[in-house]
Amino acid sequence: MLRFSRVLAILLVMAFFVACGGPPSTSETDRTTNNLTFTDATNTTITLPKQPGRIVCLVGICEDILATLKLDPVAVNDTLGQNPAFFGAKAKSFAVISGAFFSPNVEDIAKANPDLVIGLANVHENLRDALKPIAPLYIMNPTSYTDSINYLKDIGRLTGRSNIANQAAQKFLNKLAAYKARSPKNKTALLMYGSDVNFNIFTAQSLSGGLLAQVTNYPWTAGSGAAPAGDHEPGAISYSLEKVLARDPDVLLVGSLNSAQPLSKQLASNPVWSNLKAVKTNQVYEVPSDIYIFGRGTISLGLALDDAMKKLYPDVFPHPLS
Image 1 (cartoon, rainbow, N blue to C red):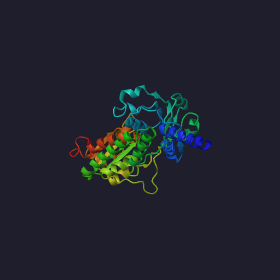
Image 2: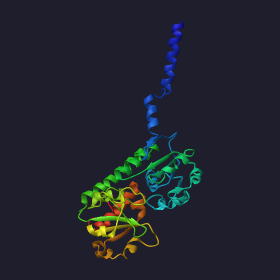
Image 3: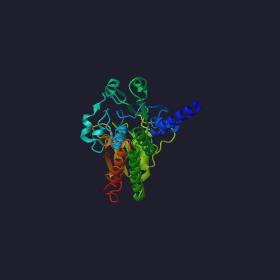
Image 4: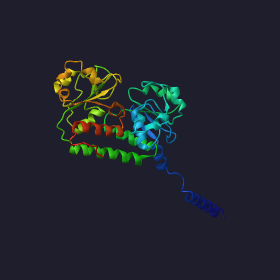
């Protein structure tokens, strides 16, 4: 009788677990944990306590990614999101993180009550300790379009929106492949940027320069002994007009960081400027810095491609490719 009672008890317990779907297996628990774990650009690994729904953006790629995933940031520290390609007028209602880009106000971040804060390498790492009681910090450092895609997919995974992220990544890759297939690639381009005559250029080892190198001739490399850009942009180096003239590109794409006077206007006072082929043929274009430099995500990179290819090869690409 006692033996029968034990058997019956075991059968009842088994029936309960079957009815309830059973206890979570080790593999299911591991999958849940893995879906909330990330390793950022500083090689710091963090497991979030829950799926992040409230995200603070300290860098443009964060807004680019969240716009792609159809998620609103709870606070931002720039106006990138107000571009219609991202959130448009709605972005004006986002809480603002005061302070400089390199030193955002931690109290403002805390007021947003975030689940996750996204920042940029070589800029925001020093905030990690101050943010520990507030929210985990995810540091990004996109140096190629592949990096940008991987960050999109990672945030998609953490927020439970992998399908949206994967579709957006493929859409960008399809656009890039279409431009590569149809581009004549017979013009040399250079993307330069700065706020004064001490300017920098993006090499082919940078995010923006590497993207351009996929669709046109872009022979600019860092090389040994090249001085890195003072603003720590990966793959960007300090440059001179004399060095630009040595290669004499067909097209100059200029990102101005000084709204008072465009960089191309400032450089025009240098006698070397007028000797450049691009200047002589009116192939100097001021380009929007928000999408060419600061956006860093797949929306920005796609818009930069559309803009650059129309300027480089207007006869081939009078309209953006889908």
